[in-house]
Length: 577
Image 1 (tube, rainbow, N blue to C red):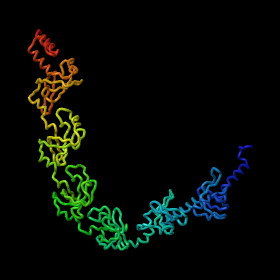
Image 2 (image 1 turned 120 degrees about the horizontal axis):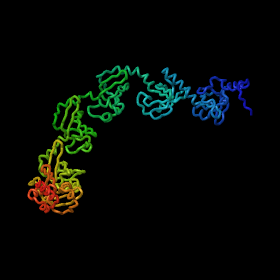
Image 3 (image 1 turned 45 degrees about the horizontal axis):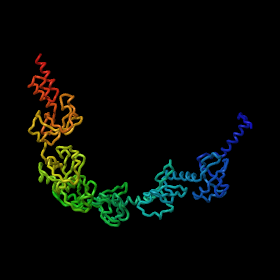
Image 4 (image 1 turned 180 degrees about the vertical axis):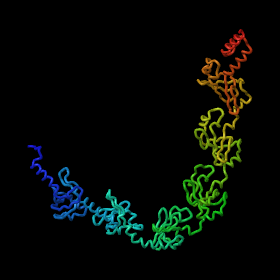
């Protein structure tokens, strides 16, 4: 096969012209445009079209025509509009779509109707979440009808509207996504709007509507029908002076009530009404009540933060959870009361500007902390039961007062470690304690167990600093010695640095435990219960006394400490000089 590189000869140019002419016979043959094809062949699965200017026959799937309701077009000689998607795909075939062509043609008509603000004819074909699907009768395009746009009044059943040709208003078009939204309500309202304006012009603020019928409820209020020609709203706050959770607590469908017109909006064509304003305001009766006086109230609503109560029908008050009990913290009103209960309360606040009344239940009960203070003043002893404990304290339940007294671990014993002593006690143990502090206003009571026993620290009352005492060594470690003075029940620590003057002698390992030795009181503070003992201090005192009495170093060797002979030698040298 011979390949020619030269394409400039006349025969090559003529061949190129013939090829280009195959795609330019019909100037409308552009990808993305809607064209018309004539059916020239029909099989069981496909429909073959003839389009002038195309090098091959476009093929349509017969199922596509069935889904579009155009199966009657599957006949030789019938014309079908299709969208030319590709002039030639990878297989060399022409790609067309009848459904896409229908959607494009239908969309153009919808855009035209939307721009001219003209209604379109459609029929509701099915229900979906949030509304219905509407089919455009002229083009078959599908549109969305929101539930709120079906009618100007709530409809429980729309079966009578299904598949019925009717007018719809185009209220929204999304040209990018190709979505359309329609409204039946707007068509209906347009006929009623002029009539509704005339009806609303009849009302003015202050008018009383007689015998309005309860039509429906919502979470924010109740709807009433006025003579069957106008629906008005009574907001939840305008139903009653009492607290109302939902309109069905007060009204029943079909009941008739008088209404007071409180607002008229001619632009939105709305009329607002009130039921409660037709009766006297119960808050005007608040002058009949006094602060700090006990009254019986009725529980009408229980919340997480307290309860709402009524002094009289319509006159609500707040009972906060902090005013429920003297002794229980974070108490829930649900555990103490139920709706409908009548309880005693004291009015603690009346704010006429904010229309607010606050009450207290605990003020009707004597403060148990004040009772305790009268019965058990500071310094007296009382018996309690361990009700709870934590890492550093015990709580004691006192008598039948429902009071918990606080007992810190440091107030358990004089001798042992407080936290270790705390482990010995459990819930239910009975303890006799001494009252150390009472703060009735803060609801606090502090007690102590060790204060009920003699204080072993009193052993030091007749002692003073530098006094010599005899102690028994309890134990020793690298930090020093644990000792107990004879006749005393408390243990003290002699630090390693206070064992001896000489560092060689200041070794705790010299002692095994059980030895009796003398030491001196280095520091003492009776108020702070603090005492420091020192063997080193005693050695210094004895050395000083020995030096003043003896001049020969030999006499110092009779003492238990080797440092004394050195001190005597220094003294003799000074004499010789």
